[in-house]
Image (cartoon, rainbow, N blue to C red; front, side, top):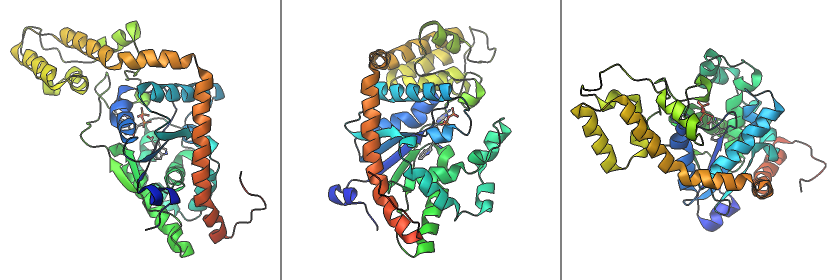
Length: 339
Ligand code: ADP
Ligand code: TRP
């Protein structure tokens, strides 16, 4: 199996994942992806990046994209991503990614993209059907393959994109008769149900049904109080398993409190209003420390810039070491060397 110098030296797996800065991050993103990323920085040679080229498929305002990008960086750092333990950077700081995406695109049958479920979903939900959105999985494949990643921790909804990355790595290797790219493994984050939004559908920035990780005070209260519930009267017993509020409580509460709240639901005399207050307290406790850390980081843009700049340097170095043999094999002329 082809391996990078680094992973050969350390026998550590390269872990890679990205998140689009295309809106404020919500608790679905946290439990479905970010928490896992933060945990896994301990377990391998982790690369995490802001997929800002991908955001261009849906965000067409420079001001907004810059704002969202900064928000995501601050969110991750506040929640515990440690730039000393992982490589944290912006996709746009690694031009080798788009270079590889073009080469992979030239090996991708249109029919493969036509099978993309995520494209169809997004268009059905009102996103502009542009070519960037259509070929999104090719850029995602390049993101993964350019670092010789072994493991890609993502939510269930990303399964097909990882399959496409594996497929395209194989196509490039076969086309040039060399193992130029590593075939990555998906690492689907298990045991995380789809987090429901305040309307009961999947929580998503596209549905305006989110509770954002860094909402607090009145904003948070308003969101939590707006969670839809059925109209079972306060005094009647209630079914926790079919309640949106309880689905969220389960994410935040420890085993004992979960059990206690479940008994209150079943006993009756406990209203959805009570459950919402309980949830509010749990969210405040859970994210309290991160909120304070985020406020500190906000005051220090120089530090945040340095983190991304250091991360980008390491990422470019790795990407270039993968890209150079590909240029050679494909016969692409280059009159200069990067850095
Ligand atoms: P959104 O639907 O808000 O646009 P993204 O598609 O950008 O979210 O998802 C980013 C990551 O967060 C993905 O890995 C996805 O699996 C995870 N994720 C998003 N929404 C949820 C949810 N409601 N429940 C669990 N995981 C989620
Ligand atoms: N498509 C991913 C999402 O919407 C974001 C992403 C872009 C990504 N490139 C990636 C995730 C590479 C993992 C690996 O969440």
